[in-house]
Image (tube, rainbow, N blue to C red; front, side, top):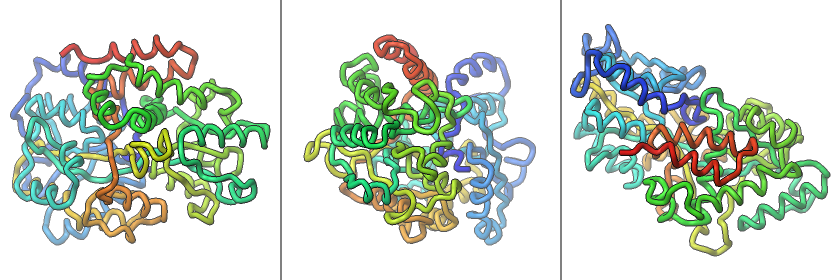
Length: 444
């Protein structure tokens, strides 16, 4: 299970309440980390805390095992589905880990602004300068200070489909948004069933797949300037540009003729776990599905072969207008940032290794994930779709924007935005939803 890249997360909105509740507790800005009894008390032990769990956690630990042995450092990893809430609680309680793998730059910035994180050491700064683009470095930077380095990454906005069905029916990959809508309508007319499958379900984080749709459409329809202003709330959710993205998504998500293949009608979107459409794609119940590059693993787990001539392949969501400003590789994506609560020598050495191309190649070679590190060899990726995603991330011509909800304050990004997507699919009017999401922005 790809916990962080698959965005299985807890609501960051809890941080505010947790901060108030613990205002009088021990610890605070400037407290060192330590991850409990072992961290901080033993220079040969470094504690790492994150959302990556199950098989992915095992692969993470495998990726640094040889380095641990060579350097005599024991990296102790702990995962939690409640990371977003608990990292704040632990920091304020003086029980922070040595290193944290933040799945949202916005959350990392929140913690950094409260004085808990250590600036990245010189060796990490050097690795970031060499290994990542300026955009990626900026996601780990707060008020001019670099606090961490990117870890893994994903490219969002892929449309998953069956190549054999396209060949049999004579369907072609669309070159613009209207072409995608036209293709959807033709599929529906030909088969008499809905072509799209969509699942918003993700436990406490239900709703996030809907935010990915909106982000992809905003970037393609309105461009990078509006997207960046939206992230900063200079363009509010109530702006016509954001409403237009909801309206365009609604042409698919709110149309019972378009969804929800294999699961029911529009009402089933919220209750369908986001991983389940993989099985519907493989068995032919569903023809089209929107999800990030990590979905390759879900499809493989469902028994499908991901290849251009295999069971399932994918194309990037097309630009809003063919040949327009957003033509080419304009993509949204996600990833993690590794930042430190402790600045001991051993912690800095681990942080340096995790920021290196050596670690990126070690982990990617184990399968299922990618990195945006420029030193990553795409051939180490475990599938062709992941190799293509790496090519997109490494290309100088790519316009990349980090997932907007991950950059927004937690109360919005994983709070009112998630909830708004649920309410919207369940029938709440768009204007009402947009006002409610916007109301989630902190007053300061």
